[in-house]
Image 1 (cartoon, one colour):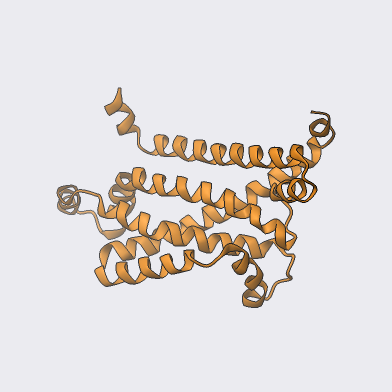
Image 2: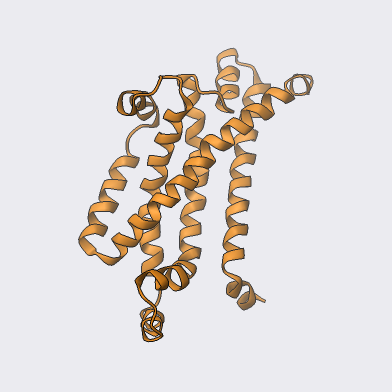
Length: 213
């Protein structure tokens, strides 16, 4: 406890850094995955191509991708942008299929009713397909959020500071307090992200709350 009390400021700073390194790619990745997933949901060939490509991207080891980023986008080796871009790639890779499957889960009779009411493609997407696809998309987003929090900790090995620093420090010194603090911090951050996504999904699907009640 004495170690924890003497390092609270550093821990909160690392936690904040970890949160935005994991959270910003989640938002950007979702914004990119939505149109890609929509396109994939409307075209079988596009679905196969995009889902396969996304799966291959996710197989790239995180440390290798972090190291390669400066060569690809021309940044400095220690620039946090490298981590943000790499994590965005991972997020898109996870979410493209989820978005496509979420949009495809909308019942055909609902789509037919929307077309009969004069809804165009964009209006139907915004007012019908996306709202009804929220539960599926939110489930995938929860997985991506937890994955991001976990993978970001690896970036300590390339000098990007966040909660992973505590894991590396504790392991290198065989010293439990920073190691345990890093593990608990990552766990709490993942739970926080998960809770926010669950809350957001509930807000966007009030009809499901009414059905449960």
